[in-house]
Image 1: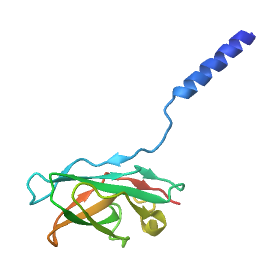
Image 2 (image 1 turned 90 degrees about the vertical axis):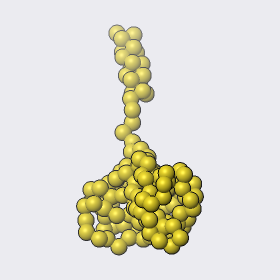
Image 3 (image 1 turned 180 degrees about the vertical axis):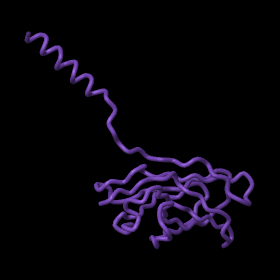
Length: 142
């Protein structure tokens, strides 16, 4: 009987060791063609696909291929709500932005809205050329 219990315990531990954990994963949008710049594409990465009460920031970056230097203004928006005034991050890049962060404490109007995303306005020579978006994510009530 002890051998059977030991065997079952070892089997249970083995199974639990290899079960996938339910973790939110980073999300990368698909490559998005930039209007008016031939061959230029940009995609946006976020560190999670869902932000729970333990999260404090939304980390993101934009990455390009075959693009000139682009200026950007990024903010967090939502398909589920009307215009919400959120902080804006600005800069420029020609390959990839540094990892930037939006603080969730500044985004309380978006808690619970389905389909939030990082929207990145792209500028060339001071003129808006296009807007690209991250994959959508959820910000759960905090």
